[in-house]
Length: 483
Image (cartoon, rainbow, N blue to C red; front, side, top):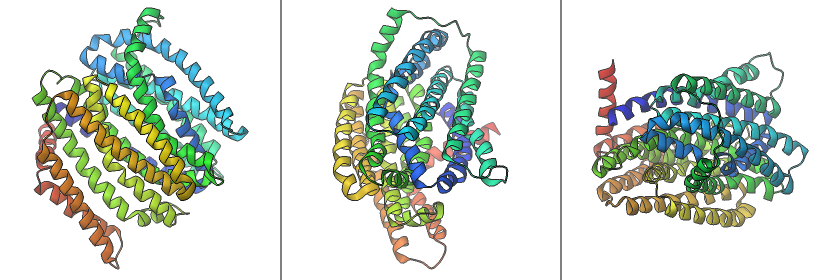
């Protein structure tokens, strides 16, 4: 199972590490620099607002489908024919309520137009996620990997022509939104075609008793989606709604969040493969924990090194990427980079809890996270603007990560490997010392050179502590065996 995970992970990482960084740093950054922080901040705020209501669109369907089909692949045709109709009903409710609340909280005509296009984008993305969950569940990992980057490939091609050639005079927010919409629509139809070749797609059915039973089972997963959407995305909405220059502050936050979002795309790749594979280990806790530490060691090592190095080099990174960057931009970016550490732990522990199917404690934790996020944002944003929102995000995500770790071990009925977590703590201290010292020296050379030096030193420390050797040797061995 580790070999299968590693092969699929290598493919998934290879595609995503090639395509998504190219999109984020080559296209998305340039879009914000072109249309300005205010316009991009408005889009970012509305995009995050639509994610808060994603419970109405998803209702936990994707996570439950992936878990169930991984355990019993013959459920795939039945789930598709029954649930696609349910999703059509849910999207109508989603559109109505999201528009109604958006109008109530004061979005003007421009904001409502943007909201409508973003809603269409979210709907297509939801159907793509649903079909990818089925494909991953039946073991079509390679198709799932290709679909994970398809929309970004299309956006790179279209926006690349618009931004870097003379064929398009000036890219606007509207241009960006329409390209985004076209890209996800094409990806959605492609996913349908790929799925139709893998399973027999029966005609849509509406069996009330079956759907009611499924919704009851999906409710805990739906609540998780909603609560995570609120505590993870409400900060940008608060920034845009609470402050006189809210669009601009949301733009600053978006600039820092872009790097965190790039990391989360990377980390979620682990989760997307971990959940269906971990579900197969439920009866063998020793194998389950070995596999979990295998994945956790890989992700947390790079999360710690990336997060701490990003914090110390926050201003340099901000100045490199953005035309309007200043110290406030850098501070916001740095705090959001530190969020990589707790979010990485949360993503793995969250997927592990889902694989066990016991979500009550997790939902209670996320509810507490929502309350904390609202309170901290209301306190910090009026005084510290985008930096306050970033500090609130770091605080809440850290508490959520600790809480999910405690919950997992309590419901799994196993004891944590104290030595493993001690090694992670030592790596954090090592990174703080190494990157802090190198940055403090203020060497009169290009800052990328000492940054790379810090990466080499801290990665070497991870090897010496035994966090990486077995994992990387395994991956290299698989590559050699397949060549």
